[in-house]
Image (cartoon, rainbow, N blue to C red; front, side):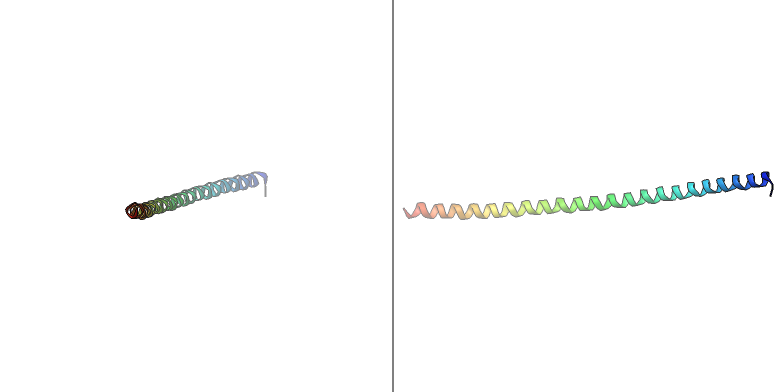
Length: 83
């Protein structure tokens, strides 16, 4: 094999490696973008669940507060009425 043929093969091999690396990099970046989008959607769903849980907790706290206030006022009323 003469030097020009070897140089041509080396040159075409380097170009092939460069092309393959570019294709693989593009595929990786596309896949990474898709996965990041999926993760962002999951995070948004978790945030909605947390907000819903907080709202439910606030409702329960308000309900218990109203019940406690009712019991306290009833007891105070009974004590004042007994005197």
